[in-house]
Image (cartoon, rainbow, N blue to C red):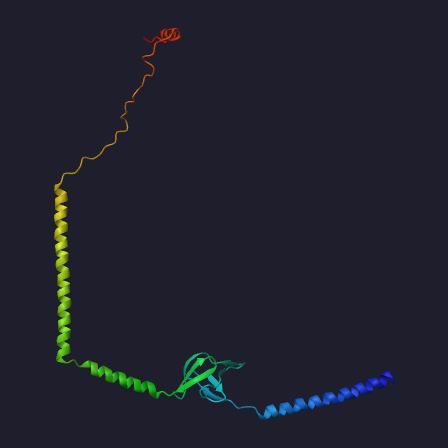
Length: 203
C-alpha cells in the first residue's frame, strides 16, 4: 500500500470520528438550552437586585451586578415588599420572615410595660423599707468617718505636743585624732640603734 493511500484512509477515518463528536457536542448544547432555568429577581430596600432560582429556604441567592453574580453575604436583609431575607451561610437562604412578627413583639413589650407601670401597696412598702435601710447604712458610714477624723485629730495633737529631737549636724572640718602606736619601745637597743638615734636626735 502506498503512503498516500494510507493517509487518505486515515483522513476518512478521522473525519468520520470528528463529525460524530461534533454531532454529540451539538446535541448537548441543544439539551442545555432546553434545560436553562429562569431565575427570579427581587429588590432590597436599598435598591440592590437579588437573583435566585426560587426565593425559598435552602436555595442559592446572588447579588446581581453589571459584571458578575456575587453570593449574598451572611445577615438579614429587608426586602421592598417588607419581608426579611435571612442568610446564615453565604449565598444560601435560611428563611424569609414577614414583617408582622416584630409588630406582635412590640405589642407584647408595651403590654408588659403597662403592667409594670402600676405598683401595689405591698411593693411600695417594701421599696420604702429598702430605701430606709440604705439611708441607715449611709448614716453609719458617716458616723465611722467622723470617729476616724476625731482619732486622727487626737493623734496629731499628741505628736505636736512632743518636743522635736535635736537635729543632727555635720562638721566636715573636725578631724578625728588618730591613735599612734609605737612598736618595740621596750626593746634593748643595740649599738647600731643608739648610733642611729643620735644621728636622728631622738632622746
